[in-house]
Image (tube, rainbow, N blue to C red; front, side, top):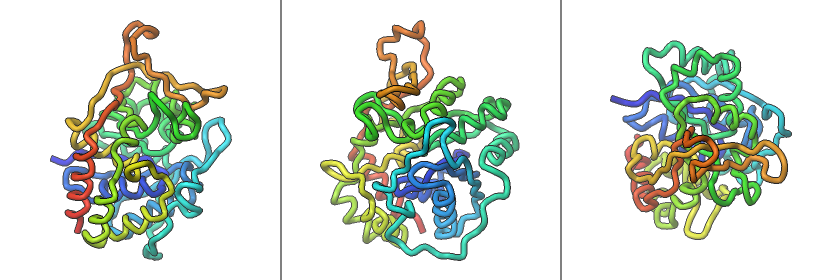
Length: 303
């Protein structure tokens, strides 16, 4: 049986790869895509989500969400993802329209309509999630778990302390981590290890129409590291489908919301400051070779 999921995202090139897999994987049942300001402005992230549903001719609704963080001024990642957020490929222009209701209401309606709790996968700033929890707290019991891309126990990528998604809206991250919903944190500690290698990228280009599209986007992706390129957001789906490829530790995560460490996710690794309580399952290591193999096989299977 496939797992019902909702994706809240800010596409973005690595988000595009994650949405591609979520739309097509036989073990995933994507119910809704909501968008948020993050890599680019929310009008562009919404447009990009619609481009992907059209590319694959999938009738998955898209709802536009928060145009800015709760409190902190908005900072995009155009330097990484380009002005459009998904440059490098000419998508069809005859796109569907987003849902008339805003993302928070669409999330509430979808969650309350389901007969069983649904897995929520945020891969951008958590603004929509925080607004959802504060506006409609009745949804909390309708969420099976959150698998969130974001955070770092080690080095950040916006400051030495903070990862982009949490840095973009640290107040929203704080609300999410204090919600009581089971959370798995898929942060830079694993996403900067699970790099798509040059050999993987060479194979990707020749796989099929989907591989060619992703390869074109990746050639405009300015988030590189020694040994390959990170697919941060795709790791959430890899964790959902193959948790055995990850090493995790349960701990309490606090989020810094001001000062030079703004956006830092601080793990109580000794269990010393919260009476031994935990609020997150934190990914600390990953089988990078297994990730590359899974990514290629998954894209190759998309018709």
